[in-house]
Structures are given as structure tokens and as C-alpha cells.
Amino acid sequence: MVFVEVFRLLVAVCGALVGLAAGNHYAATAVGRSTGAAIGVLVGYVVGGVAGRLTHGGMRKATRSLRDVPAPELLAGMLFGSIGLLVGVVICIPLFVFVRENFDFFITAAVAWVLGTLGLKVGMAKGRQLADALGVTRRLTSTRQDVAAGSDLADTSAVMDRSFFVLGRTGLFGPELLIPELVADELATLAEGPDPVASRRARRGLEAIDALRNIGVNVTFVQGDVPAAASIEEKVAILADRLDARVVTCSVEMARRREEAGARVLDLRSLVSELSPDHVPGERLKVDLIRAGRQPQQAIGFLPDGDMVVVNDAEELVGQTDVDVVVLSTRPTNQGLLVFARIADEAGSLGGAGRQASRDLSR
Image (tube, rainbow, N blue to C red; front, side, top):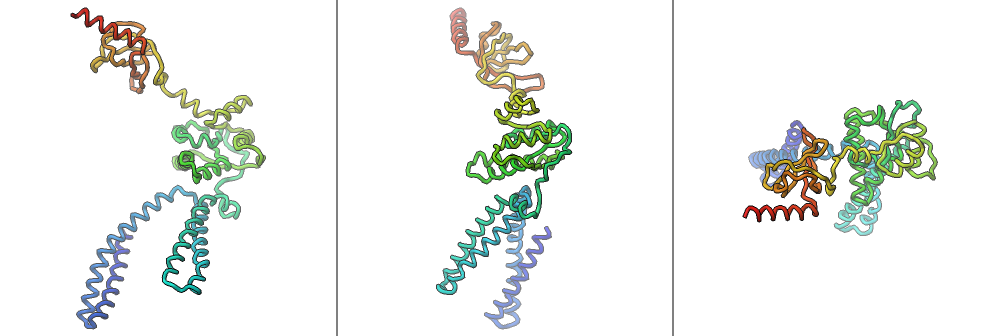
């Protein structure tokens, strides 16, 4: 690693100079100076290598953590953080003029650190709005009238849902995925908000947008002149109508309104629900038990669509038809859906009686 070796060289040179100065101070001879310089080089070589690796590792972690931070937020955070540090130092100047004690430096450092951190957080939280206001950069493009036909426009609930990235990666969305400016702003606000659940989901949504762009999905940020008094859902609907785009949402209310208006809408929650297994835990089924299972006390049956049902503690009911069972869980397999179940309460009591009768007959 070039960085580590150069860092080690610089530290070794500094160590040699420090050792030379120390040798000249304590033993003003050629041998003393040489010995001090040699010791300084050795110490600097070892310390420089360790410190260089730690520094390089820290910079790599910082780079990974900042990789997904948009440039406006990073720029504004650095600017406001620097201003905070300078303000902290300036307001502490009277301490050095009137107090003039050793603790003045520590007070100044503490005040500068607090104001610098505050400026950093404020800058990164509002960086996009500040950058747009100053004209430094423009992450979001203006509303276009030439978006690709069949494009999709996602609202906040859709971007925050865990299925958003998976469905986008599989190519479910249209030729162009539109993200309104107001949705991006709401996600940024929620990501910095006090609610840990909403903050985590909003950050996941922002990361999903960047990830979709990185894998080649055509993501476009749009903004438009919408009524300020309207709610966010109404603003999203207005933009979708102007761009003739289908709304992608997880909001039941939004989906209902779009359907009532005769507009195109994709309800991700409804889609995921329809793609989920047919049989949910707690559902009651009737199944014919035809043979024993691989595990002790298990019985095997099949549903009319061919899916296998494994029933626990039902081996003695093999051969019975229309046995009431309760679904415990399901698991997709190459042959279809595998359903795990237990005897229902009513059937369980009958099954228990049947097993007791079998034991009595065997005696």
C-alpha cells in the first residue's frame, strides 16, 4: 500500500529529526546525535507503519460511509461545519484577552467542536435545498413533458417499502422510474427525524434509489408547480396526471383514489400479497391423509392443486379423508408449495379418541 509506506517514511523522517534533536540536547557529540537519530528512525518506522494502517483503514471506512451521500449534502455539511468551528473560535477570543488561563484552550476546543458538529448536521440535513437555492447544483431536474410512455411515478410509501428495490431490480417498473422532488425531500427529512423506524425505512429507500440507478434502472427526479396547500399524496397525483405516469404506491388511500379516478396505479402491497403463499399460518384446510411421513408421527396428504401437506402427530389418522388441519407454515419447493400443519382442535380431539381406540384394540 503506497499510502502506508509514504506515511511510514514521513513518520520515520520526523522520528529521525526528533531523535537528532534529543541526542544533541542530552549528549552533544556525534555518537549521541547518531544514536538519537537511529532510535528515532526505528521508533518512527514501527509507529508509522501501525498508524498508517489504522489511518488507511479509517479513510476506507469513511469513504464507504460517504459514498452514498449526495454531493449537495456533503458540500453543505463541510461548509457549515467549517463555519461552526470558526464561530466557536471567534466567540472564545475574549477568554484569551480577559481570562488568560490554561483552561481557555479546552473551553475553546469544546465550543468549536459543538458548533462545528451542529453546522455539519444542519448542512447535511438541508444540503439539497440550500444547494438548489444557491444554484450550486441541481440534483432534481425540472418537470419534463417528454418522459417515456408507460413510466412509473413512485410516492414516499412505495420507496420506503422493502419490496421497492426487489421489484425494481426485476424490471417490474416502466421504462422510466420517476421520483418527485417532494418525495425525495420527505425521505431526507424522515431519514434525519427522531422516529428510528421511519428514519431507518427512509434511509433504506434512499439507498434503494441509488442502487437501482447503479444497476441501470432509468431513474429520473422530477419537480413541478403544484399547489402548496395540497397534501403530498395530492401533489404526487397531480404530477402523475401531468406526466401521464402510473403511480407506484403502498398507500391504500392513494390506490383507492387513483382507482376511483380511473387512473393507472400499482399497489405494491397488494401485488406482494397476491404473490405470497396461498395458505397463511392459522388457515384451516381439509386434507386426505394417504401415508405416513418421514418423521415419527407425521402424516402426508395432498391438496387438490397438488401441494403436499405434512401434518404433525397424525400418523394414526392415515387413511382418513377430509381431516381438519391448521396451517403452521409454508415453504416453496421445486415441486410446489410445501405446507406444514397440525390437527385442528376439533379433529385433534377426534384424533386423540381414535388413537386411544387403536391402543385399546391392540390390547
